Image (tube, rainbow, N blue to C red; front, side, top):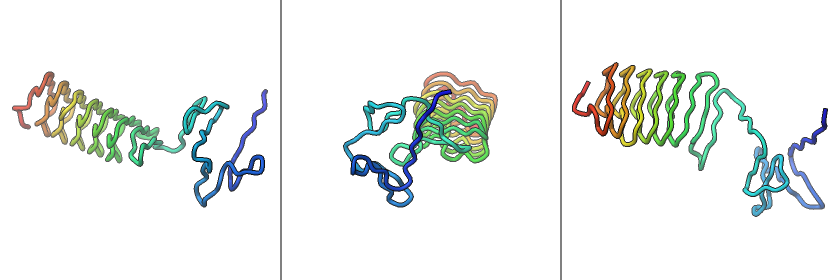
Length: 178
């Protein structure tokens, strides 16, 4: 077996008479603003460069950008979310996949949905086992409908509670309101 060195900064960690890390209370941070931090590498090219895997702990782990969650995964509910505001309201729904800005934003307890595209499945709250693929407002009004497949820009946009529908194409099925 090999050996490894592990560093943990708990207050001030000094090097060569200077201070690399400073503890400002609950947060430990780099004090040299122009420097980069490397983990597993000696040649950090960005503010944080990681050579290896990153393990996010917790039942729901997330990556935020400017305070907005853009990537999250839930190991208890098996939801996988990528995009700003995507899946923001999920509380009990499981096995959902949302990719895109506002994708499945309102889903609460709905399960087994796949939503790909800007605003796809935006207002779906209780509906389950739906597929929303397309930009604009694909499946936009669907709130409780189940087992629907809407593919194309704004396809199925006016469906609210209808189930078992297949609508493919630009604005397909928008004349139908259910």
